[in-house]
Length: 318
Image 1 (cartoon, rainbow, N blue to C red):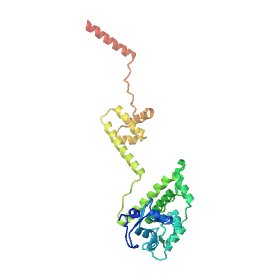
Image 2 (cartoon, one colour):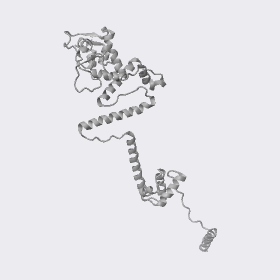
Image 3 (cartoon, rainbow, N blue to C red):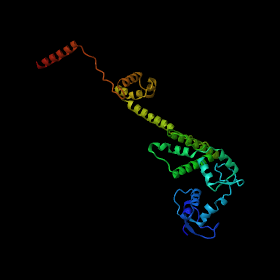
Image 4 (cartoon, helix red, strand yellow):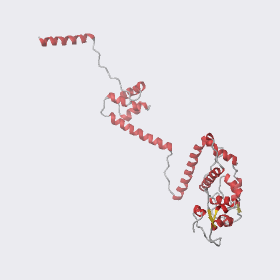
């Protein structure tokens, strides 16, 4: 027989005869509204189910509470299964627990210890949750529908369950401003990373290398780029004219390097460095030094030179 929608969604076998005596499929619409709501909550279904076989109807509806033999352990702290002093969680209790940041399906059971822990956790008021989730969309007049709100709460509950399992504090969205969310998310991610890394190191008995954050990676990249630039300038300086050297040295001068650092890095004279620093200050980056004019001749010397050439020409003609 064809699998029902519930079997396909939960990836479980259909038409088993463990709790029923015949095989059959019926339309979901034949279920009562209460049973349909329970089915969606217990299967974590976010899309419309169309059919259900008698086996899954028994497993998720008629015998669901009976099949819950141990505490569902929402905090993931039990080292052994707890089978005593269990109480069934109602739909209303499941909703309240969800707004506390944890996920327990209606029909599952809690031990006394888990019930007491959940009672001590302050409940987040539903209106506060709505306002918190809508904070980032205020400028666009967007509000979450009840279904979207429930889906977000499910995601938060699953995250918090995982966080508790690895020893991290739960997510808290209430009273968290729009501009604080990015920082809070990065901080939370860093803590999760450190916690998981520590646990892996303990299990493997090794020291894992430190992961560099974005800032550290950026600093390293800029340092490597600067080293490459220094090597290029060194190659250009070798075998070039003094005038060209001074022009090239305006590059490190623009970085506000000290005179000593430029001298030692590029192996140039103190005179060249001073000229480059002054040139950068006066004219800017990669400015060309002015060409030096030769010694000016006096008017008398110029006149004597002219007469000499005139006499030479007359002598040659004669």
